[in-house]
Length: 508
Image (cartoon, rainbow, N blue to C red; front, side, top):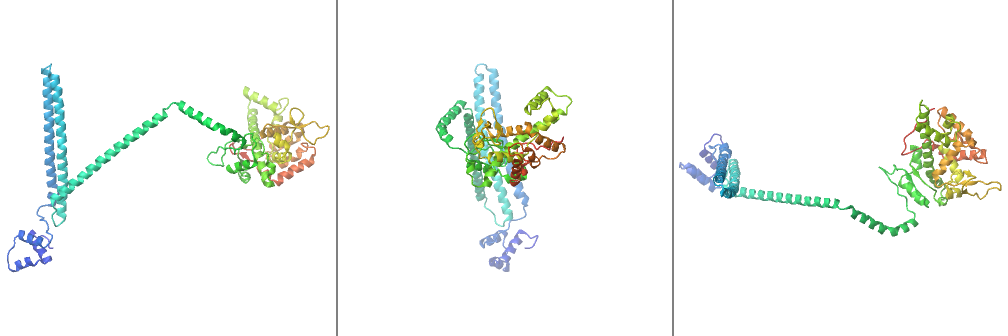
């Protein structure tokens, strides 16, 4: 269509485009049709009629609806202001009556105040439908005019008004429903919090009664559990590889239970050899059926896993004492507490004349490889009668006190095998024996020499000094070397506990 055409010309152009024969016949006969007649013929032939653009789009779309809304708001303001004015007038009159008449003024004042409040409330409620009508009329008029300007055919305003009002009702109902459910949920949450607080505030007597009931219920089961050996419970930290210090109870633990425990805590000798770390698991005794393991390698590994943490733990204690000794002796002035500690250690290591140099020689570790080799040799890898009955790992003799009588001893031999309450006590007594007995002075002297040269202390370098530990002498030391080499016990020389601080070699 051409630009800048009048509304009538636009209608004629539409008749040509849609080929309306009736209008074309009138034009050929040179009969002038009015604009209304052309519109009628076009509507009859279902031709969309364009809106007259003489009235500006902005005026119809925005100006007229806003003016209508303004008038409605003005009416609302006037109604509300009049209601408020009436309220204050009546309140003022009531106050005046109160001031003038002292007997009935108070009653009239409050009656008037009550009525005025009711009228004000009714007035405010009456404004709600007016506000709703104003808003809905404004939206419907704006939409009608907008759609009418965009489309060629007019939209019926009554139907649009009904549609908008229906939409508004739906939105209003949904809003009320949401508010209702929100309030309901808040009410339920308040109830639940109150119930929780009530349960928390219950007297502790009820909890004690429950505990007593549980104890009474579990009592009959204890006797049965005592007969059955349970697998010890291990407290684990972040992972199975990190085990807190565990002392196994003095029970008749079976080898199957021990192996299961090692599996649970991922205790593997290959890992210990590589990482130089061992878990602090302290057995108080050997399994009574350890000798029933047919696999020799498995039997030896089980023995090493039991004894290794005990040996390393005692060495750690000795190293701590040695570091403390070095710190005290390097000071010019010592405290009473430090002097008392020194006297205690001098007695423990049987040092005479307060000889600190001799104490330093004796206060040192026993190489792990030697301790494991001697324990294996003296206890038959944990299966001897002395080891199972008296926790005697190293076969130490005693002539006083209670001990285990050897079966095959000579007529003139009055010694017994020293008995211990737990395995760790046997390890401690063994280390005190090597560090104090005069028969192992050569062992201590050679070890001290390695310390002075800042060399690491290894078992294979010291085995030859232990020939007096057994009656067989040199043959005994050769067996120790053989056990160390065949079982790669030198791999455990620098092993430390997983829960201990890494200690550097002591420099003299």
